[in-house]
Length: 189
Image (cartoon, rainbow, N blue to C red; front, top):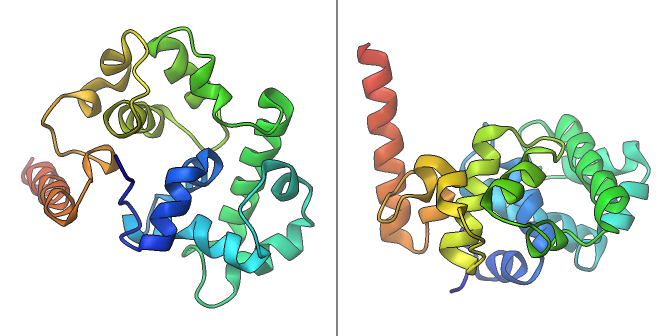
């Protein structure tokens, strides 16, 4: 299955071939539209002139990296703070996974272990880790035993709760609709 989160062919192609880009896109997916967040890794790689590597991002001068993310169009609404988070994530990947992010799921014993590995990443809380487990299972075929349980409600088959469920324009609309309905329900309480 091909990734269609950025809704731009070249950005989605990068997400499909680069586990680091996918993790960075998920990290950026907060307080901005999903498409903007998942286009971020592509924008960064274009500015660097090649696909992302954890080693390069981790060792990049922090001020220069923040400036790179702040160039117009900015990679995120908060480019300086998100640049720091992306570098923290990259440094963690270098330290714990030799810069190879796919080891997170390739070496996970089961869904619970995968969830823990993701939740341990800088910038990944419980919800982001659950959504990423669901994304791996639903779209990339990474299905260690217990992955649906580890993903919580995001792992439910036929749900339209998160980026894990976005595979085309129609599913994107359904996810947005579900989120809007949840916001309305929360306000009504």
